[in-house]
Length: 97
Length: 150
Image (cartoon, rainbow over all chains, first blue to last red; front, side, top):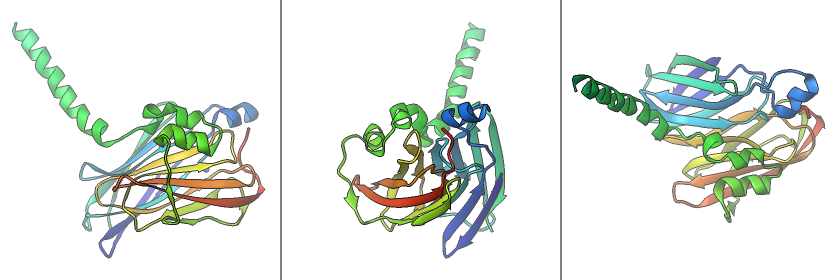
């Protein structure tokens, strides 16, 4: 997972590139692979949730997200974590630049 | 007696540490499971938000008119309206719901993501404002090469 966060005019713009094949039920049957997609992704700053998404398998493979929020400072840390359909989790921390 | 006291204290502590994350983070896959099974956008919207009459024209959707690669169609959505929840739907795949975004404190409605579309169809955005009103935007996206199995 890649996370980039940049403060500009009081608003932090965040770019997240997650890593998952995002294979849903139908695609798994067709391609004979296992179902695997991210179901929930959360971004926290200083422990408070600033953005989150409940997701399904129709996001692109290795899904990309861009979002924004206000109220954080340069140097604050943003934690992004996700859980997938198999219960697998991943976490990444980035510094707001 | 001592042991019982200790155990109950432990249970309280565990509940206290688990609670904040479950309160602030809503898993719409768990709270609105019917949304994710709905085939069409209309049913999915109804399953998630109920019978709503959204206001049109307040959300700016940025989507290509013609997407060459249906495997990753960039969809951007933004608005000056303050919102708490933004849901993204399409009618190109076996099921409609793609993602439900939630903005926390200080959240700015400016989201971009990439979705799969196996054919030409409408993309629908429904947002719930902090004022309790619903906002919607629909745009047709033409897909030349489909990108979703099934």
